[in-house]
Structure formats: C-alpha cells, structure tokens
Length: 330
Length: 251
Ligand SMILES: Nc1ncnc2c1ncn2[C@@H]1O[C@H](COP(=O)(O)OP(=O)(O)O)[C@@H](O)[C@H]1O
Ligand SMILES: [Mg+2]
Figure 1 (spheres, chains in turn blue, red):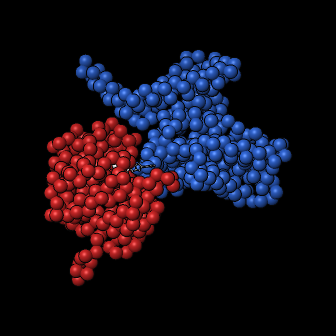
Figure 2 (tube, chains in turn brown, purple):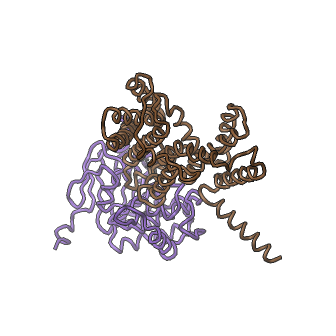
Figure 3 (cartoon, each protein chain N blue to C red):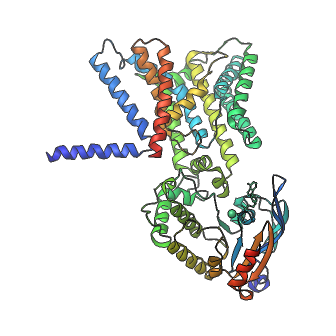
C-alpha cells in the first residue's frame, strides 16, 4: 500500500518537475513518442524496424544537420531576431570549402576559412539589421536570395565534388556502432550553447535583449552587440553544419540547404522558443529538431507516402505553438 | 579638502536642455536642472510635461537635442545608460525596468551579473545576495523566492523589484520616475521613509510624482515642468503646500 503510494507520489513529483522545466512539454511529448516507437519496434521487430542499427544510423545522421543550425537559430531567436539566410550560408560555406580544397588549399585552412566566411556572412546580416532597424526577417530574406545567387554563380549551377580523404571523413561522419560522430558534434555544440545561454553573462543578455529591448538597453546592455553576436554564432554554426553534411555526401549541390532556415525555426518553435524573443531553451530546440526527424522516420518505416510528412510536420508546428501559448498563459 | 572646494558645485548640472522627438515634437525646451548632494528633488508636472524625458536624458537612455550635462563640474556626454551608471546614476524608469520572461534574481543582476573572469555566472552568489535583499532589506509581499518569474508578479510587486534593485546597487544619484504609482498606501509610506534614510546616507534623489503631497512630504526642493519648460524651481523653505498647489493648478 504505502510503497505503492510512495511510488505514485515519486512519479508525480518527477512529472511536476519535468513539467516545470522550460522545455518540459516537449520533453514529455518526445519521451512519449520514443516509448511508443520503441514499444512498437519490440512488439513487431520484423515490420517496424525502428531499433535496427541501420535505422538508428539514419536518425543519428540526419538530425545533426538541422540540429546544429537550430542551436544557432535558437540563440538568435531568443535575442529577438531571425535569419532566413542560413540555408544559403550552409551552401556557400560548403562550396567555398570544396572549391578551395580542390584548388589545392590545405584541408584545415579550407575548413577554417569556410567557418570564418559563415561568421562573416552572419556579421554582415547582423550589422545591416542593427544599423537599419529594418526587421531581420526582411533583411535576411534578401540575403537568403543574394547568397544563394552567389552560390549559383560560383558553382555555375553544377555540383562540386569534395573528397577530403579518410581523416576528415572520420572526424565528422564515422560510425560508432549505431551512433554517428556528427551526432556527437551536435551534442557537444548543444552543451556549449547551453553553457552560453544558461550559465554565461552573454546568455543572460540574449534573454534580456529579446525579452524587453528597452529595459535591456536601459540596464546598460549593448543590445546591438548582443544581436550581432547572435547572427555571427549562427553563421558559424550554419557553415559548420554545411561542412559536416558535405563531408558525408562528398559533394556540394548548389541548392543544398534550401528550406533549412524554416525547418530550423520550426524545430525551435516546437521546442518552445518564442517567436518574439526572450524565451527558449537549448534542450527544447534539441528535442524539436530530433522530433521532426523521428516523426519523419516513423512515417518512412510505416511506408507512408511522402506527403504525409509535410502534413504531419505542419500539424505538429501549429499544435506545438498553440499548446505552448496556452500553457504559458495558464 | 575637496569637500569644501566642491561644496557648491552640484553633483549633476544640466544646462539649456532641449529635446525634440523625431524633429518635431518638443518635449523639453531650454531646461536648467541641477541635483545637489544629499538632496531630494521633487520633479512634478502634468502628464506630458516632459518629466520622463528629462529623467531618461540624465540616465543616458536619451540624448538631448541641445544642451550640456556636467558631473561634479565636468562636462560629460551620456551617450549610453552604461556611461550614466558609471557616473553614479541609478534609475527606476516609469515603463521599462524589468524583463518579464526572466526571474527576479536575473532581473536584479541583469547587466551587472556576478561572474568569474571568463564571464560565467556565479548563480549561487547572486541567489544568496538576492535572497538576503528580499528577506532583510526590501521585503515584497507575496514573494517567497528570487526564482519567481517577474512576468507573473503584480504591478506593485514589479515596482518593488525595481526598487529593490535600485537599493541594492545604491549609487550617488537615484532617479525615481513615479516609483509609487502601483504601490499601496502603506507601501508608499514605507518607501518614502526609505528614501529619506538614503538621503541621510548621502545620496541625491530625484522623485518624479503626480502626487504633490508625497513630494512635499520628503523633498527639499521642487522643480515644476509645464509643457517642457521649467516654471518653478524652489526650495521647500521658501514655499508651502498651498502655494505649490496653486502654482501647479495654474499651469
Ligand atoms: N518616444 C517618444 N516619441 C515621441 N514623443 C514622445 C516620446 N516620449 C514622449 N513623447 C512626448 O513628449 C512629451 C513629454 O513626455 P514625457 O516626458 O513622457 O512626459 P511626462 O513623463 O511628464 O508625462 C509628451 O508630449 C509625449 O507625448
Ligand atoms: Mg512620465
């Protein structure tokens, strides 16, 4: 009797605690979906191969591309800004890295230059936004097309091969059992972002700037510098994601990364990041990115036709935002 | 020594301050305002008189269209609130003090976090100091912990948090823009007592209020703005409440 009620109150306390976390709602949804998927996979191992090594590898391979970008998008959204150009930065950095490497530049130099280029593109976006006071949505809509145009120009609209040899391939894309190295990169970046956001002065200023820009300024925070920093971190992460993804497929396509900007915003929003800034968590964005791919994967395993994916993702985004809003008001 | 040489120089002196918003809306016109040491100035005037604009210029949030600011006789350009804070000015604004989506502790320390050399927050230290502040110095009714989200507080509680922060980072000059508008009668009296104590500790205070009786209770000098112009700057000893009321009503 009493042991039973102890267990019950323990479970309840755990639930309350999780529920009270910033990313509690998505965590509960995510765990529920995992339990269902794992349960189904154990019950029907032949028909629903969720736990098979090959499926896990697919998941661990696909999530980081979006997830790494979502980490940066999350930071920037918390500071109250958007960047729609990250998909173009993703392609631009990959292309420049591949071209430099193919022209004989040492690999490590090509990689570092590509990351620096991403940071610079983010910096340019941020600079124009904070100087002009035009909403970042508009500015980066322009820069999304501009940099995509540059990519098409540089690549002459054709693919660029990229074969960096085994060292880089291993560093970015090796398998460790079912786990892929790029997923470890994603986890490491998420931990760094968490430290920055929750444990560092800069993160506090990101939240303050997005939460109430006038109050933040009055408290002596240089809100322009904070926003610029957000744009630059995101630019760097977008190029890193592009580099990892290019290493896996050994090829840069001039249209690669199209649509990533909206998927990354979707991942953050599903994870509870506010569109108007000031609210969001690293765990939420992490799970948001993971959830989008889990749903996609489950639908594939169920052999659902492709259009179901968009239909489901659309539903999830709307449901998540509406639910987050309701729970917040409560 | 420096006490005597600086004795007659106001801590802050503003000369010929004019402020236009967007080039056409005139909020202040040729205002001369000074803040002396150990003084409470009652800054009064009707809605739209320019009180908040003046406060924001002293605190560095706004820059004047024309005019100069002197700190201890030396001209300073307050081009950001950081510079004003570094000159010893702490402000409670009328409308932009707190960040709703952050908790009380993070609001109190926002912009002045306790960190290590690398900028990582000392959350334990900040939490303890916030606890101490809320327990012993500025108790706020209904607040149990510094972890409460500011967005969930009442208007009075929010105002009390801004007051707590200003008291915590006590500076040379305290600018208070309608700090009691959301407080109860009892809280207001406690607050007025408190700022008198701060004056005794040597602070200079500017109290913006609608309520001339509150100002009269604590201020040493009254500064009346009307449509952006100074119409009265008088010591308490040279006036009385009836005269003040008459002049305020006349404008
Ligand atoms: N940001 C602003 N933009 C344009 N006009 C403003 C702004 N802030 C205040 N004003 C105008 O300036 C005048 C003085 O306002 P304010 O300083 O807020 O007065 P008070 O605090 O005495 O009520 C008013 O006419 C007000 O409408
Ligand atoms: Mg005002």
